[in-house]
Length: 528
Image (cartoon, rainbow, N blue to C red):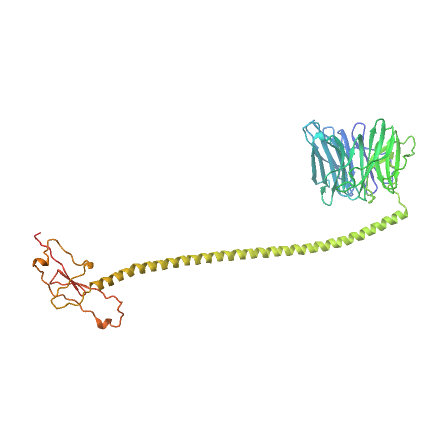
């Protein structure tokens, strides 16, 4: 049962031929009156789920007999069709699927089960608005884990709560995790209860006070038990071992135990055509005895999903037991004045706190923008400083290289000068020593003979020439020497070397004059 903002109700059900049928009821028409039903699709289906968003768009999810998961959307004139999943292997099957809406956001969840022992099973979650979808999360499990999706619930704040059972170390446990639309992420699953017996038909309800309520049925010998569990949905449970309370025990099997929170917490179920209800005034700690809801013998109790956004304090989708599609409790009826006044006061306080929070958030956003701009400016200045530092380092390296080159060149120049001086200085000293050693003492008389020093190597002897002791003496021509210019060199130091001139006379080719020394060359005999 889907209710629009104008009060129109859409009723969907399966025909005996497994066709999806629906009808539209006006707001003033009596619920359950005979209305012509229309077939959604001519193809038979295994099961379906339907919901409505806050913009009055109808969304239907169908699992066909051809193993296709198909999505339908009503655009006001006709149904638009889109395939979500298509299983091509007989070893896979969709064991669970649902579609739920909160305001203008639609959630699709389904579980692909595998019959192959070494296969892989998938739990997939889509989120969108009917036109654009986003795959939010994909879980993978092994068939050995015996994973089964038990219940999915959307609270009045848009949080998606997931309850599933799983086997680990031969122990069946109840797992819980939550999807937050504010963070667009799922929490890590936690174990909230250890299951010991045959359990089935779990139902999860989350109230606005951040508390979870879980109800299910168990079978112990020949008795059927309805159990209840309450925890705060946080990252970890309050205790290591939570104790479940027993609401009802009988030998008759109950069907679809469900929860509803209004002025108090209600638990409803059906047994043999009758609807029973138990209530708790302390949030699930204690429960009243089950009471049967009276109805006419011709009325048929019906279990259905009810989606509406007319009550902001209630979750958008509820599970209800009704008589001929009538709600058991008047969900749209007026509440007491005190309750309404308290609710209005709380709503006003919440709106005031929300406005203050919005102002604080806006101020924080402005500060964050200023900080961000300052950080960008600082980064730009840091980049410019790094560039300048890089250029300075490059210039310093260049100057260091040039200084090093100048040092090397100066060392080479000084070394070259020292080598040149060392090479020139011995030559000058040698000439001076030669001149000094070659200058003979003044002669005793004018006819004395001048001879050279043996170290001058200027006199050469020959074996064929007779020595003076044999009575043969060479003629001694007069030596012609240029006197030193004492007048011009008188002002100079005595260490200055005088230039030695070598003169060979034309009349005597065998005589060489070196300064004050005459060198006589003995001619060789032409005959020899």
